[in-house]
Structures are given as structure tokens and as C-alpha cells.
Amino acid sequence: SAVISQKPSRDICQRGTSLTIQCQVDSQVTMMFWYRQQPRQSLTLIATANQGSEATYESGFVIDKFPISRPNLTFSTLTVSNMSPEDSSIYLCSGVFNYDEQFFGPGTRLTVL
Amino acid sequence: GENVEQHPSTLSVQEGDSAVIKCTYSDSASNYFPWYKQELGKRPQLIIDIRSNVGEKKDQRIAVTLNKTAKHFSLHITETQPEDSAVYFCAASRGGSQGNLIFGKGTKLSVKP
Image (cartoon, rainbow over all chains, first blue to last red; front, side, top):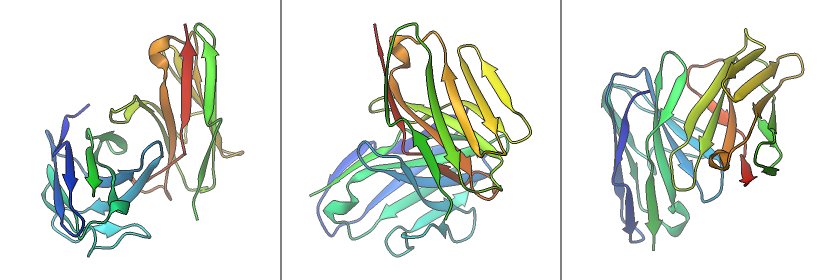
């Protein structure tokens, strides 16, 4: 499996600020995704990070709130904008290898005060 | 919309016993079904997967079965060990699209020594 890293691993932020999370993969992947996982909950897909074009967002998620970049095949960022306590969650990126095998980064634990 | 239901939500077994987790999906176009294991505070790890052209797949103590007609698939763990204790998530591909997964709500498995 590939190595996927994220930073920061955790952060505590003030309401109204923004945080950018970085995701780095050690080899080229066809697809990259961003998920949110609330405590003791399942994974919810936020968006597909498309290389060189705008991300594809799932229902309930919008670009103004969660802008995503993917400048190349191994790197992506997710920004959580104008944060509120409801945005407190774990954010995970993932990469798809071998057509459909999907591996996850270690996650970023975000707390918004 | 597409949905994946997972049962049971919690499962407690004695060490050495077998554990079975079941999932049903709604999207008839789903063709890829991975299972993830997530230990507390860790990332989800891909443990086994099955594609729609296969009815069963086994990897040591872990096996997965798929019934496409009934739209359900199951994870079987034999000779359980305390280190199998974790939350297990099933997932199904959405509309056959690469990497786009719908996750079940998870099963918390506890293996008592």
C-alpha cells in the first residue's frame, strides 16, 4: 500500500478562522478524496479532488466552505473556512490505487472553539 | 439515494469464536465492496475487498462473501483474537464509479480474552 501523510495531525482553532489541511501521497494516484468523520461515526465523503480542475462536491458540501486544491497527482489541500464548533471533526484524505483500492491518510483532528 | 446498511452495530465474541458482519446495499450498479478496520485513534485500514464478478474471497482468517442478487455482502472472521477488536466498516462503490464509496455505519467488534 502507498504512504499517505497529512498535516497538521491536529489543531485547535477559533470560530471564524480557516484551516488548510495538506495531504501528500508517496506515489501517483488516479483519484484523491476528502472525508469527514465525526466522533464514533462513519465516514462521509466531502468531495473528489480533481487534478487541475475544480473539485466535485457531495450533497451538503460547498466550495465556499471547503475549497480544495489538487495541483498535481500526489498532493491536495482542503480548507475549512469560517469555522464554527460544528466543524469539529476528523478530516481524512484518501488515494485510490490499482483502479479501486482506496487508502487513507492518518487524519486531522480539528477542534473549533 | 444510495445506501449501505450494516449490522450489527456492536458485536462481542469470545476469543477463538467466529464473528460475522453483514451489509446490504441499494445501488445495483455497485461493483466493488471493500472492508475497513479502524482501531481507536487510527486511520481506516483496508483489510479485504471483493469485486462483483466474485462470490467469495478469503485471506487467512478473514473471508468476504457477496450475493449480488440479494445485494448483500458479509465479513467473516474466524478464530478471533483480542487484536481483532476494532470498528469495522463495509463500503460499496457508487454507481460503479472509481473510488467513490458509500460507507456503512460501522460495527464495533470486541473480542474478549
